[in-house]
Amino acid sequence: MAITGSTGGREGWSSRTAFVLAAIGSAVGLGNLWRFPAEAGNNGGGAFVLFYILCVVLIGLPVLLAETLIGRHGQSSAPESVRRLAKESRASKHWDVLASLGVLSAFLILSFYCVVGGWVFYYVGIFFSDLVQTGITGGAFEGRDPAEIEALLPGLFGNGPLMVGLDLLFLAVTYFFVARGVSGGIEVMAVWLMPAFFFLLIGITIYGAFGGEFTESLTYLFTFEPEKLTGPVMLAALGQAFFSLSLGVAGMITYGGYVGRNVNLAGTSAIISGADTAVALLAGLCLFPIVFAAGLPANAGPGLMFQTLPHAFQSMPGGSLVGILFFIMVSVAALTSSVALLEVPTSWMIEKFKLTRIVSSALVALGALALGSLAALSFNMLADFRPLGFIPLFAETNFFDTLDGVTAKLFMPIAAILTCIFVGWIADQKLIDSENGLSGGLHLFWRFLVRWACPLALAAITIVGIFPDLF
Ligand code: PFF
Image 1: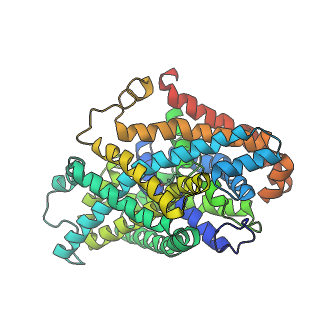
Image 2 (image 1 turned 135 degrees about the horizontal axis):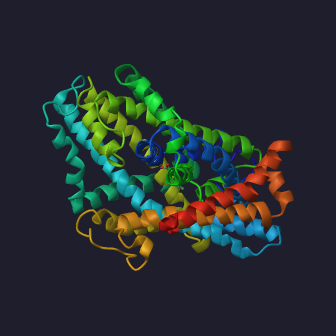
Image 3 (image 1 turned 135 degrees about the vertical axis):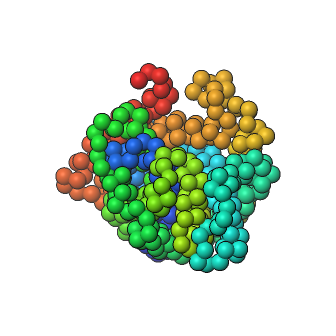
């Protein structure tokens, strides 16, 4: 039952805090903890980080506000919310394509996101068995060769059935929360797990600050070297900002649909993007001191969290315990995001086919399991399968990378551009103004960003993403 003001009779968040925590839970995930440090390390540190912050403020935040206001106005699933706003603005109802594309993207991202979530569960298990053997004070994997630790990930990748089983496990936990409903499941999870997550993140960061190379990490992450700010680095930063804030997949439209009328959306959007960015930066400050202290490189990319970090925990006192806490924290963050990803298509199915929540979420989860299994097998048995091999952009990509590429390079930016055009130009501006909670100069600035800066910047990433050789 919603008590954040009326949500049109639908089930909604029980308080503004619940919405804020759930939205932060959706935003904070593998994107912050796994992808951000890897991207920062691969793209030269400071230049990437500072440009990323600029993208969050000037592009991410305005689009976040645009998405939540569509949802709050419509009080429905994402496509229906767009249709309502379009109808009241006397615009074509076909603008709902922006949300339908988002629903499809959320489903595709869910499929491969849970595969990575499964790897995180696997590492919780690995550190748990290590903790049992070494005890609380021992370093991780005592007496084992570092090459053996790094080989754990390729070992997992080589085992198709295990990868599918882990994917299933992660999806099952996600399903458990979504099937219980907005206030009974998703919210309960966010309200309990997000504070636990922050506690762990700050604890491990303080631990790294005392035991690791904190100053070196600060310099690495925040020294601005203009010559490193190349086109690809800027695009990587913009793409990361979008993924991290869960934009372009109708996720924030869906969550906005459960928000009551009395919540100030501009202020809430600022809190959500501020918290998401703070977590990404903290993740960098949590990870790099530990990695640098072990004398390991910063640019290990996706392997940074799964290979470099476990290796680094080896030389730390209490590394086994810190390791398990770290991967539990990543599991929590990943789950609050996968829950949002499952909720987007679920809420659409409930409305469209008049199914119950339990059945809708089960059907979506089964579909995600089917695609996710193919994604998991693309690291082993289906390594040579190129699902979109006939399209030059995806000629070389396996199933997992195709799901990622199609959503990140095509669907998400296109949906976000359409959102900006719809909110900035097409929708009745009086309705928009009544929802956004802005006034004066800030309001004019937001409108300028949504009308011009955001769609143009997004069009740039899409074009460069599709035609990388043009530039
Ligand atoms: N923002 C999440 C992350 O950073 O891991 C990923 C994500 C979650 C994207 C939910 C989209 C979404 F709807």
